[in-house]
Length: 236
Image (cartoon, one colour):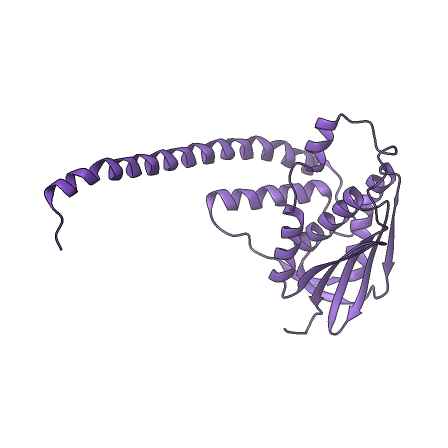
């Protein structure tokens, strides 16, 4: 049934409002992207300079600065499109855990706790992107120290054709009296406590991208975060 002219004319204000809202949203999105790209540019240069001036790890593992550059590159891809190429190589459990512990032992001590390795199968090997697995472990260790603690155990063990990486805390909120005396505002910015859940989403994404899975096991004695990844040569 055709519309009457009066109905067509009467509908123009709504259509104009919708078009205006869409245009304003597109303009805001473009402006936000421009601001984000400027911030990326300003961050990338000093990070690259720091990476070039800092010593590289003898065993080839990524340093925290190198991982910051990788995270910045991923943000760039999310804003401007494209995907980062995964670099899959054979990785043994032992060196992965050792590198993670080296990055976080100082932070654990600052929190008045400890970080202990329990590599029951250091020779077990997976095919994975070293940067992404390191990123997943860092997120789990940081969560354990900040929201669990004070004593954290990072472990590797075989599990039905998989390598099981786990991060377990001893339960309870990490003691505040042993933490460095930063201002509350600065601590919130540095630790990311204003944002919740992003780290676990990163871990889930990394595990699934490698054909594995991620889950949490909570109890009165603490929280165990578990990543199961297929061993090299196995399929799921």
